[in-house]
Length: 106
Image 1 (cartoon, helix red, strand yellow):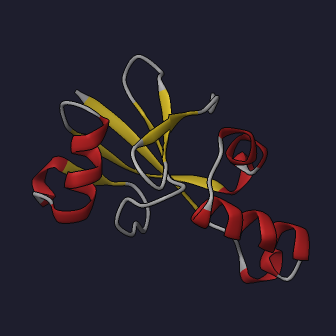
Image 2 (image 1 turned 135 degrees about the vertical axis):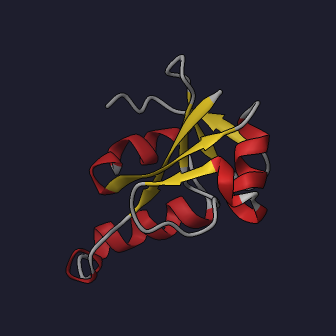
Image 3 (image 1 turned 120 degrees about the vertical axis):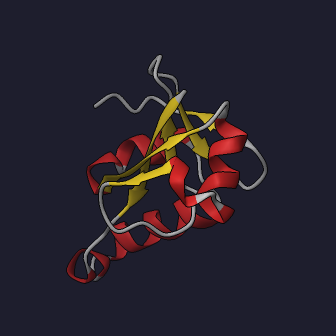
């Protein structure tokens, strides 16, 4: 199955805004679906990963194998606050432990 990975990409200029900076920090340290949906405009599609499930996307996005990853933009390892969407349109965000569901329609 193919999964699409979105990662947050906020410019240095946007991070000068204290509201955006605080929301970015919250996404990285205490993510929740409402905040991620609110910050959707800062997310970029970075890769497609071939995997069986969301947990395997996390694993492949961190340790490979690289041949299962099709990069679409600069990408760091899959981590807290990232959004993963499966072929059926189920959107999950990487939480501190596991995943949480999020409304993240394109």
